[in-house]
Image 1 (cartoon, rainbow, N blue to C red):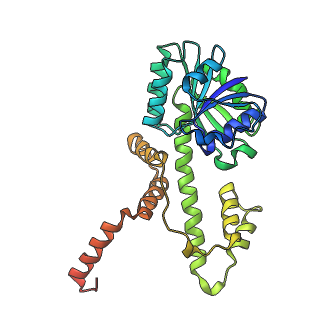
Image 2 (cartoon, rainbow, N blue to C red):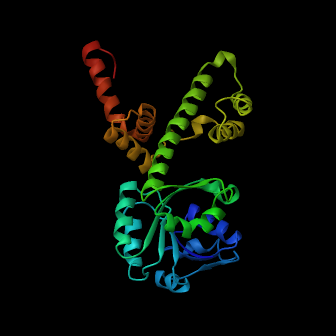
Image 3 (spheres, rainbow, N blue to C red):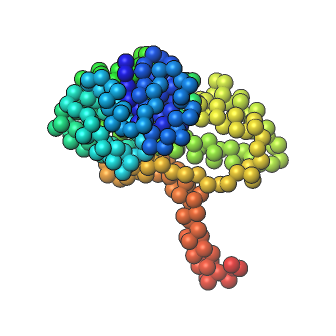
Length: 299
Protein backbone atom coordinates (compact mmCIF):
# COMPACT_ATOMS: atom_id res chain seq x y z
CA UNK A 1 0.00 0.00 0.00
CA UNK A 2 2.81 2.41 -0.87
CA UNK A 3 1.92 5.30 -3.17
CA UNK A 4 3.73 8.40 -4.33
CA UNK A 5 1.93 11.73 -4.64
CA UNK A 6 3.34 14.64 -6.64
CA UNK A 7 1.61 17.98 -6.12
CA UNK A 8 0.39 19.00 -2.66
CA UNK A 9 -2.05 21.80 -3.35
CA UNK A 10 -5.45 21.78 -1.66
CA UNK A 11 -6.64 18.63 -3.46
CA UNK A 12 -3.31 16.80 -3.49
CA UNK A 13 -2.63 17.39 0.21
CA UNK A 14 -6.09 16.22 1.24
CA UNK A 15 -5.80 13.14 -0.96
CA UNK A 16 -2.48 12.36 0.74
CA UNK A 17 -4.16 12.70 4.14
CA UNK A 18 -7.14 10.52 3.21
CA UNK A 19 -4.88 7.81 1.80
CA UNK A 20 -2.65 7.85 4.87
CA UNK A 21 -5.58 7.79 7.28
CA UNK A 22 -6.98 4.88 5.27
CA UNK A 23 -3.83 2.82 5.84
CA UNK A 24 -1.62 3.65 2.85
CA UNK A 25 2.00 4.76 3.15
CA UNK A 26 2.40 8.00 1.19
CA UNK A 27 5.66 9.34 -0.24
CA UNK A 28 4.97 12.97 -1.16
CA UNK A 29 6.81 15.64 -3.15
CA UNK A 30 6.02 19.18 -4.19
CA UNK A 31 8.24 21.69 -5.94
CA UNK A 32 7.29 24.18 -3.21
CA UNK A 33 8.45 22.62 0.05
CA UNK A 34 6.27 25.07 1.98
CA UNK A 35 3.43 22.69 1.08
CA UNK A 36 4.93 20.15 3.50
CA UNK A 37 4.12 22.25 6.58
CA UNK A 38 0.63 20.85 7.07
CA UNK A 39 1.65 17.23 6.40
CA UNK A 40 4.73 16.63 8.52
CA UNK A 41 2.70 15.61 11.57
CA UNK A 42 0.53 13.17 9.60
CA UNK A 43 1.26 9.52 10.31
CA UNK A 44 2.24 7.46 7.24
CA UNK A 45 3.11 10.51 5.12
CA UNK A 46 6.77 11.01 4.23
CA UNK A 47 7.68 14.26 2.47
CA UNK A 48 10.86 14.00 0.38
CA UNK A 49 13.17 16.58 -1.16
CA UNK A 50 13.42 15.35 -4.75
CA UNK A 51 11.58 13.35 -7.39
CA UNK A 52 14.50 10.91 -7.43
CA UNK A 53 14.07 10.26 -3.71
CA UNK A 54 10.36 9.66 -4.20
CA UNK A 55 11.08 7.10 -6.93
CA UNK A 56 13.67 5.25 -4.86
CA UNK A 57 11.51 5.16 -1.72
CA UNK A 58 8.76 3.28 -3.57
CA UNK A 59 8.99 -0.48 -4.12
CA UNK A 60 8.93 -2.19 -7.53
CA UNK A 61 5.78 -1.70 -9.63
CA UNK A 62 5.44 1.80 -8.25
CA UNK A 63 2.14 3.70 -8.20
CA UNK A 64 2.52 7.48 -8.48
CA UNK A 65 -0.39 9.91 -8.38
CA UNK A 66 0.09 13.29 -10.08
CA UNK A 67 -2.05 16.14 -8.71
CA UNK A 68 -0.77 18.95 -10.91
CA UNK A 69 -2.20 21.68 -13.16
CA UNK A 70 -3.05 20.38 -16.61
CA UNK A 71 -0.77 21.12 -19.52
CA UNK A 72 2.91 21.99 -19.40
CA UNK A 73 3.31 21.47 -15.64
CA UNK A 74 2.03 17.89 -15.83
CA UNK A 75 4.02 17.14 -18.97
CA UNK A 76 7.29 18.48 -17.52
CA UNK A 77 6.96 16.29 -14.42
CA UNK A 78 6.14 13.21 -16.50
CA UNK A 79 9.20 13.92 -18.64
CA UNK A 80 11.34 14.19 -15.50
CA UNK A 81 9.93 10.93 -14.15
CA UNK A 82 10.74 8.92 -17.27
CA UNK A 83 14.39 8.51 -16.24
CA UNK A 84 13.34 7.50 -12.71
CA UNK A 85 10.61 4.93 -13.31
CA UNK A 86 10.56 1.67 -15.23
CA UNK A 87 8.33 -0.84 -16.99
CA UNK A 88 5.62 -2.14 -14.66
CA UNK A 89 5.11 1.18 -12.88
CA UNK A 90 1.77 3.01 -12.94
CA UNK A 91 1.26 6.76 -13.31
CA UNK A 92 -2.13 8.17 -12.33
CA UNK A 93 -2.94 11.69 -13.55
CA UNK A 94 -5.47 13.20 -11.15
CA UNK A 95 -5.28 16.67 -12.67
CA UNK A 96 -7.96 17.98 -14.98
CA UNK A 97 -6.12 17.20 -18.20
CA UNK A 98 -7.68 17.38 -21.66
CA UNK A 99 -8.80 13.86 -22.48
CA UNK A 100 -7.02 13.80 -25.85
CA UNK A 101 -3.73 14.63 -24.06
CA UNK A 102 -4.41 11.69 -21.74
CA UNK A 103 -4.99 9.34 -24.67
CA UNK A 104 -1.67 10.46 -26.18
CA UNK A 105 0.19 10.05 -22.89
CA UNK A 106 -1.24 6.59 -22.31
CA UNK A 107 -0.03 5.46 -25.73
CA UNK A 108 3.45 6.96 -25.29
CA UNK A 109 3.90 5.46 -21.81
CA UNK A 110 2.59 2.05 -22.88
CA UNK A 111 5.43 1.85 -25.40
CA UNK A 112 7.80 2.09 -22.41
CA UNK A 113 5.85 -0.53 -20.44
CA UNK A 114 4.48 2.10 -18.03
CA UNK A 115 0.79 1.94 -17.17
CA UNK A 116 -1.30 5.10 -17.17
CA UNK A 117 -4.60 5.96 -15.49
CA UNK A 118 -6.42 9.21 -16.19
CA UNK A 119 -8.41 10.06 -13.08
CA UNK A 120 -11.08 12.73 -13.09
CA UNK A 121 -11.43 13.87 -9.48
CA UNK A 122 -14.34 15.77 -7.94
CA UNK A 123 -14.85 16.70 -4.31
CA UNK A 124 -12.88 19.89 -3.81
CA UNK A 125 -12.09 21.00 -0.28
CA UNK A 126 -14.72 18.61 1.15
CA UNK A 127 -13.05 15.51 -0.26
CA UNK A 128 -10.96 14.76 2.83
CA UNK A 129 -14.03 14.33 5.04
CA UNK A 130 -16.58 13.10 2.50
CA UNK A 131 -14.42 11.30 -0.03
CA UNK A 132 -13.49 12.09 -3.62
CA UNK A 133 -15.54 11.07 -6.64
CA UNK A 134 -13.21 9.32 -9.09
CA UNK A 135 -13.75 8.78 -12.81
CA UNK A 136 -11.01 6.46 -14.07
CA UNK A 137 -9.77 5.69 -17.57
CA UNK A 138 -7.21 3.06 -18.50
CA UNK A 139 -6.68 -0.63 -19.12
CA UNK A 140 -8.38 -3.10 -16.76
CA UNK A 141 -4.99 -4.12 -15.31
CA UNK A 142 -3.94 -0.51 -14.65
CA UNK A 143 -7.25 0.11 -12.87
CA UNK A 144 -6.85 -3.10 -10.88
CA UNK A 145 -3.50 -1.86 -9.57
CA UNK A 146 -4.92 1.52 -8.55
CA UNK A 147 -8.17 0.07 -7.17
CA UNK A 148 -7.06 -0.31 -3.51
CA UNK A 149 -6.17 3.38 -3.41
CA UNK A 150 -9.36 4.39 -5.26
CA UNK A 151 -11.42 2.61 -2.60
CA UNK A 152 -9.75 4.67 0.14
CA UNK A 153 -10.12 7.96 -1.70
CA UNK A 154 -13.76 7.43 -2.71
CA UNK A 155 -16.75 8.05 -0.39
CA UNK A 156 -17.16 4.26 -0.10
CA UNK A 157 -15.25 1.20 -1.24
CA UNK A 158 -18.01 0.39 -3.74
CA UNK A 159 -19.44 3.86 -4.35
CA UNK A 160 -18.14 7.10 -5.81
CA UNK A 161 -15.56 5.61 -8.16
CA UNK A 162 -15.85 4.03 -11.59
CA UNK A 163 -13.69 2.54 -14.31
CA UNK A 164 -15.28 4.59 -17.10
CA UNK A 165 -13.46 2.94 -20.00
CA UNK A 166 -10.21 3.04 -21.93
CA UNK A 167 -7.51 5.68 -21.73
CA UNK A 168 -8.97 9.18 -21.81
CA UNK A 169 -12.43 8.09 -20.63
CA UNK A 170 -11.87 9.28 -17.06
CA UNK A 171 -10.81 12.78 -18.02
CA UNK A 172 -13.53 12.92 -20.69
CA UNK A 173 -16.19 12.09 -18.07
CA UNK A 174 -14.76 14.73 -15.72
CA UNK A 175 -14.74 17.33 -18.50
CA UNK A 176 -18.45 16.80 -19.16
CA UNK A 177 -19.12 16.69 -15.40
CA UNK A 178 -17.64 20.17 -15.07
CA UNK A 179 -19.66 21.45 -18.01
CA UNK A 180 -22.84 20.23 -16.28
CA UNK A 181 -21.62 21.92 -13.10
CA UNK A 182 -21.32 25.23 -14.97
CA UNK A 183 -24.92 25.01 -16.15
CA UNK A 184 -26.34 24.02 -12.74
CA UNK A 185 -24.48 26.83 -10.96
CA UNK A 186 -25.63 29.36 -13.55
CA UNK A 187 -29.27 28.29 -13.23
CA UNK A 188 -29.20 28.56 -9.43
CA UNK A 189 -27.53 31.97 -9.51
CA UNK A 190 -29.99 33.32 -12.12
CA UNK A 191 -32.99 31.96 -10.22
CA UNK A 192 -32.00 33.57 -6.93
CA UNK A 193 -31.25 36.83 -8.79
CA UNK A 194 -34.83 36.84 -10.12
CA UNK A 195 -36.21 36.12 -6.66
CA UNK A 196 -34.14 38.92 -5.13
CA UNK A 197 -35.27 41.42 -7.77
CA UNK A 198 -38.98 41.19 -6.80
CA UNK A 199 -38.59 43.35 -3.68
CA UNK A 200 -42.30 43.75 -2.87
CA UNK A 201 -42.53 40.09 -1.83
CA UNK A 202 -39.74 40.55 0.73
CA UNK A 203 -38.68 36.94 0.20
CA UNK A 204 -36.35 35.35 2.73
CA UNK A 205 -34.04 33.69 0.21
CA UNK A 206 -32.08 31.78 2.83
CA UNK A 207 -35.25 30.16 4.23
CA UNK A 208 -36.57 29.49 0.74
CA UNK A 209 -33.31 27.76 -0.26
CA UNK A 210 -33.47 25.72 2.94
CA UNK A 211 -37.06 24.74 2.13
CA UNK A 212 -36.09 23.61 -1.35
CA UNK A 213 -33.44 21.32 0.15
CA UNK A 214 -36.21 19.04 1.48
CA UNK A 215 -38.32 17.22 -1.08
CA UNK A 216 -37.81 19.65 -3.97
CA UNK A 217 -36.82 18.29 -7.38
CA UNK A 218 -33.95 20.85 -7.51
CA UNK A 219 -32.36 19.63 -4.29
CA UNK A 220 -28.62 19.04 -4.73
CA UNK A 221 -25.27 19.71 -3.09
CA UNK A 222 -25.03 22.95 -5.07
CA UNK A 223 -28.38 23.99 -3.61
CA UNK A 224 -27.05 23.05 -0.15
CA UNK A 225 -24.10 25.36 -0.74
CA UNK A 226 -26.43 28.12 -2.01
CA UNK A 227 -28.51 27.85 1.16
CA UNK A 228 -25.36 28.05 3.26
CA UNK A 229 -24.16 31.16 1.40
CA UNK A 230 -27.53 32.92 1.68
CA UNK A 231 -27.78 32.08 5.40
CA UNK A 232 -24.45 33.78 6.01
CA UNK A 233 -26.08 37.05 4.97
CA UNK A 234 -23.05 38.57 3.24
CA UNK A 235 -24.13 41.70 1.37
CA UNK A 236 -23.95 40.85 -2.37
CA UNK A 237 -22.31 44.19 -3.17
CA UNK A 238 -19.30 43.13 -1.10
CA UNK A 239 -18.56 40.30 -3.55
CA UNK A 240 -16.72 41.06 -6.79
CA UNK A 241 -18.92 39.83 -9.68
CA UNK A 242 -16.06 37.91 -11.31
CA UNK A 243 -16.16 34.14 -11.87
CA UNK A 244 -13.14 32.23 -13.14
CA UNK A 245 -13.49 29.55 -15.78
CA UNK A 246 -11.48 26.35 -15.90
CA UNK A 247 -10.27 24.54 -18.99
CA UNK A 248 -12.99 21.90 -18.72
CA UNK A 249 -15.81 24.32 -19.51
CA UNK A 250 -14.08 25.49 -22.68
CA UNK A 251 -13.21 21.94 -23.70
CA UNK A 252 -16.83 20.86 -23.17
CA UNK A 253 -18.09 23.66 -25.42
CA UNK A 254 -15.53 22.71 -28.07
CA UNK A 255 -16.56 19.05 -27.79
CA UNK A 256 -20.16 20.09 -28.43
CA UNK A 257 -19.07 21.79 -31.66
CA UNK A 258 -16.80 18.91 -32.70
CA UNK A 259 -19.52 16.31 -32.21
CA UNK A 260 -22.37 18.48 -33.45
CA UNK A 261 -24.27 17.78 -30.23
CA UNK A 262 -26.08 20.92 -28.98
CA UNK A 263 -25.12 22.05 -25.48
CA UNK A 264 -26.62 25.56 -25.25
CA UNK A 265 -26.96 25.72 -21.46
CA UNK A 266 -23.35 24.73 -20.81
CA UNK A 267 -22.06 27.04 -23.55
CA UNK A 268 -24.07 30.03 -22.33
CA UNK A 269 -22.90 29.42 -18.76
CA UNK A 270 -19.32 29.56 -20.06
CA UNK A 271 -20.09 32.80 -21.93
CA UNK A 272 -21.53 34.28 -18.71
CA UNK A 273 -18.23 33.59 -16.96
CA UNK A 274 -16.30 35.26 -19.77
CA UNK A 275 -18.57 38.28 -19.43
CA UNK A 276 -18.00 38.45 -15.65
CA UNK A 277 -14.27 38.70 -16.32
CA UNK A 278 -14.73 41.93 -18.28
CA UNK A 279 -14.52 40.29 -21.68
CA UNK A 280 -17.82 41.89 -22.73
CA UNK A 281 -16.62 45.42 -21.96
CA UNK A 282 -15.50 46.22 -25.52
CA UNK A 283 -18.79 44.84 -26.87
CA UNK A 284 -20.87 46.92 -24.48
CA UNK A 285 -18.91 50.11 -25.17
CA UNK A 286 -19.37 49.70 -28.91
CA UNK A 287 -23.07 48.95 -28.39
CA UNK A 288 -23.44 52.15 -26.37
CA UNK A 289 -21.86 54.17 -29.18
CA UNK A 290 -24.02 52.50 -31.85
CA UNK A 291 -27.10 53.24 -29.73
CA UNK A 292 -26.07 56.87 -29.59
CA UNK A 293 -25.37 57.12 -33.30
CA UNK A 294 -28.78 56.04 -34.53
CA UNK A 295 -30.91 57.09 -31.57
CA UNK A 296 -29.15 60.08 -30.09
CA UNK A 297 -28.95 58.41 -26.69
CA UNK A 298 -26.35 59.64 -24.18
CA UNK A 299 -23.08 57.74 -23.80
